[in-house]
Image (cartoon, rainbow, N blue to C red; front, side, top):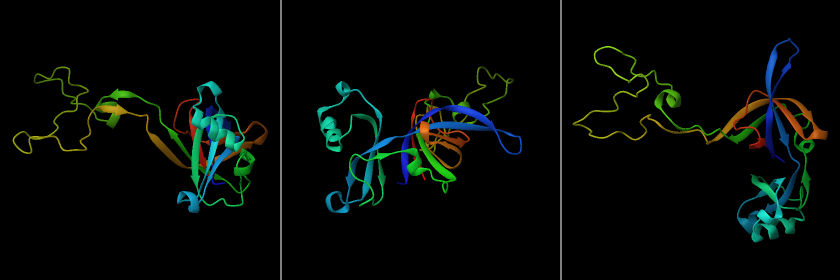
Length: 208
């Protein structure tokens, strides 16, 4: 398996061999259940679908109930497909644990998550603008304003892609090559060096 679904537990810090304090993120990875196996013959591509985190049956649609029953498992909250050919390696209902993914050979992983939403933000916070800055010559309440955005007579419009105020955060973010510091199989935990996108309790995709 090239990956597994997890959940961000929080951040801690550990001391390295050189005595330096290293910020780390604790991730609960799995256990996940194989709920669907896609093949080139039936679906046009090869992939395996994993499901993670228990969900109340009364909050599950009838279609999804049948989908999970076919795999012989209870309803789950998060479903993710991992594209690859797993013919003969896994079957419906198999449980994938953290020890199946993170062997001694795995030293670095990629983590995909949804960043924290910041709402509607101005140019100073969103793009790092310095603001107009000047306080003389009639400047008034312009310290965090964007300044000029374009000419008047031509092109008489704002070009697409202009850095302006707007929605910030709540985007899919992928962090590459995070070092795996520790794996705790009995608790389904993975400790990685550095930070990962998202708030505590948010879902993550860990890719080998």
